[in-house]
Length: 135
Image (cartoon, rainbow, N blue to C red; front, side, top):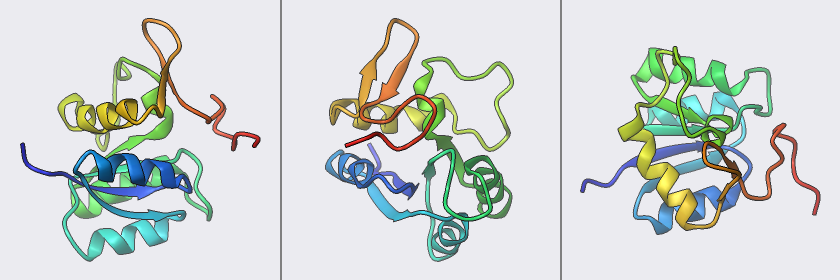
């Protein structure tokens, strides 16, 4: 299997560690859409893993849209990893199941995804509403 390169737009360094240990190339982490777009301009990426809420003015969905329109990079929002099934009408920028699967497996293997039932998973240590977990 070919190694994937993933842009990580998140403050969570544990995501970078998990993806690296799974053999993926990781670019980042960065915390703003502007920095993620700059990284995308410097080299090819296969996928972006993005926090729903970023520092700066753009949301994760806005960054995902810009990455797809400008560079053709599909994205997975961390909040979307909380559901086992994709939305009925996914955004044009959303990563396909076969693209997101290796990322989901790497995070699960690292213990960063916890089962909540048969249809949902949650990022370990990350509340469902996306706020930073209390330490």
